Length: 100
Image (tube, rainbow, N blue to C red):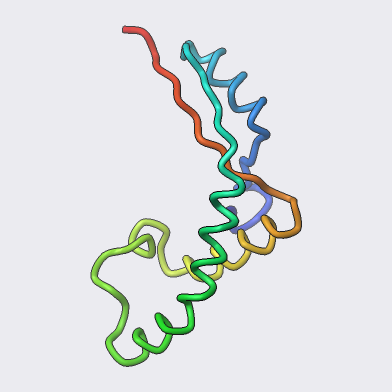
């Protein structure tokens, strides 16, 4: 999730698959994971309040996505959830391999 438009590299699943093929990857298979992402965000919303209270008491957890994404993880997650709910984004899983 880009912090501004210049860092936005979002692609459609078809465009990303085409880029992978042009880069020499074969066996490009795509699975739409939008429904799973919607369920995940819904589950996260339900757990967010309890986690907020725990963070206030104990501080952030020692491991988690916040370590990979950084201090803007909460903001980025909220933005992604809104975009997903509005149908502006989807989530896809790609499997491909590059021959030796």
